[in-house]
Length: 87
Image 1 (tube, rainbow, N blue to C red):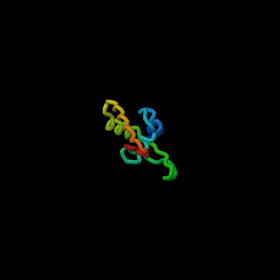
Image 2 (cartoon, rainbow, N blue to C red):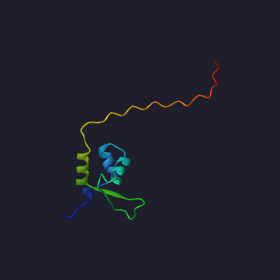
Image 3 (spheres, rainbow, N blue to C red):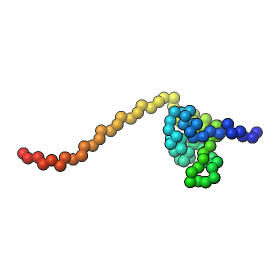
Image 4 (cartoon, one colour):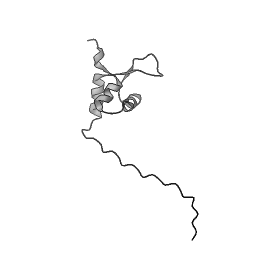
């Protein structure tokens, strides 16, 4: 059975479905966790396409069903004071 264009997704489409940043999807592709193919002409600026079935497998493997709470921000360190203290 020949593949059709609607079986492939762009990273932006996946990011919209998941409600996340495109950079997260690109990181998953570049790290090899999300299989994708480069349909562009060069490797300097790849044009990624992800097969629908590969996306579903990746999504199932990376979905826990619970949203993580954001980690609290660490307090900023104060710069040492240059004030001279006299006792």
